[in-house]
Structures are given as C-alpha cells and as structure tokens.
Image (cartoon, rainbow over all chains, first blue to last red; front, top):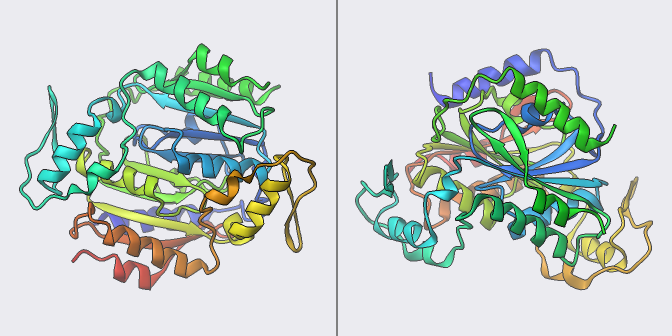
Length: 191
Length: 191
C-alpha cells in the first residue's frame, strides 16, 4: 500500500471515532513547545498533550529560527500562550553536518546522501544547485549550547515580552526522557 | 500544579514504559508532513504515525516558509524522505488577521490581544514594538489557495527534486478528517 493510502486509511479510522470537534482555537493549557521534526519525537506523548492543549512548533533541530519566532509571537499575542519550551534532542541529525557539508552535497546533486561513520556522503549524481550556499542550515555543534543559544535568542527578541518563561530541555531518544539544560532554563526565566 | 510540573510528570510516565530506544534516525516510512502548530492538531493521531515513522514540521499556518523548506530539504537530502504532505486546517487563526493588523497590535503592546467577533482586538497597554513591520506573518486569506500556493512554492524551489510528490490537504478540526485540495495535489505530483 502507498504512503498516501496508509495515511488516508489511518485518518479515516481517527475521524470515525473523533469526539473533539468543539475544541476552542486558543490552547487550553496556555503553552507552546518548539522542538525538532525528528521522526522519533512525539511531543504529544513525551509531554502529555491532548488535542487542544498546546501549540507545537517543529523544524529541523527545533531551532529558534525567524519562522519559529514568528510562530511563537502569534502564539502569545493572538492565542494567549504564557510559557514556552525549547526541546532539542540527543542523536539529532543536525549535529552530523555543517553548512559547508550541506552546501557541497547539494551543489553535487539533489539525490539523497548516505549517512556513514564519517557523516553524510553523497552517492547521487548531478545536477545539483548552488542555492544551498544562500541558506543558513542552523546546524548544531554543541547540544546543550544550542539550547542555551535558542532560548537566549527568543528571550532577546524585541517582540517577546520579558514575562514569558522559556524552559530549555533535551529529549533523550534512547530513554524517552526530558533532561533539563539548567543554563538555558535559568536564562529563560521570566524577568 | 504548574505547566512545567505537569509536563515533567507526563514525561516521567512516558519514559517509565518507553521501549523505542533503538529507532533509527531516518524516518522509517520515508515521508514528511508540514502542518500547523494549532493545538487541536495531533499529526501523529490524524495521520497514523508511530515514533520513528515520519518527519513532522509545524509552524503558524503550516506555511511553506523559508524555514519549512530548509527542514524539508534536510529531510530528503540527509534523511531520505520521498513524499511530502502540506496539511493546513479549517478555523485557522491565520485566517483571522492580516499583516497590517498584526503590526498594529504589536506596535501598540506586547500583551495578549482578544479574539472577538470582528477579529483580534488589543486590550493591552504599551510599550509595543515596530519590529513587527519587518516580518511577513504569512497570513491566509483563502484556505484552499494557501495550500495550492505552498505546494507550488515547495515544488518550484531550486533545492527540491521534481521526483518528490507533494500532496495538499486541509484538516477539518470539527470532524478530524483530512480533505484533499485536488489542485494542490495535482500541482504537487512528481514530474
């Protein structure tokens, strides 16, 4: 069965017993999580969310990109969230390459690269694109520091009120556990 | 109990029976979903995902922002996804305001606005910030067209290979059902 059919079948099953049609637009529990797109992470499960509870923003790395900040500002200004979590994770793909590697890989080809013991290796053939040189890939070289940096960037943004606490955590994909990054949480505490 | 304590308690419960510590980094089912941060959406539930299955990218509106495209390119180039879904939804907050409204609200104050029958109304007091004028808030004026536009933007990006199909859907928050946007899916079909 194709992925599309599988997804639509799963959705049909979900919809057939759906009883959450009256949920309000603003998150009922008043918080937001910024985390990684990684397939192993299920924020609803690891943080105990039901439909309607909290905003969940996800991108490669769970980074405080401009777009994540756009989403967080909408989250508090229009929909009333009062606390935010930045949750990166162990064994993140973003730790295994650099901007230079990504630019070289994509300049070579638009096919999928292979992850080997020394990082990603291109096995595809061209054409590639030089467009990758114009993108900041927001890679991670120090796991805890990236959480500290992202919390700091959010807190320092001119559209983010000082009253909003921002907690910094790393999710351990081997244990399912959230591990605090104390320096990030401390820096993210409400003023 | 505070939100932070609730989240950590829920995580402790999740971790206590966690048995997915051996999942591989690349998504097992080889696809990615771009969808909205809205609290009512649980992509794992509405699309039938288990931990390890698929990348999930979320932002305000589920829009094909530069950052979403950064994440999608990492998703296929480094981690091998082969098919993508763009899934917006009914009753999205992004339909209820414009760039001008957001800029005025934030210029007035950094407090939470109130959603009334005529849209968002600012009830906070200053100071605000003019920074909002420099941000494209990626609001939505036509629900189906926004899906078409986002799929088209992704397909036209120089770093996206023509072989990747991109399906366009709208999730109905009242029924839990995914509704296809045929024009988007057709435009997103592999070349």
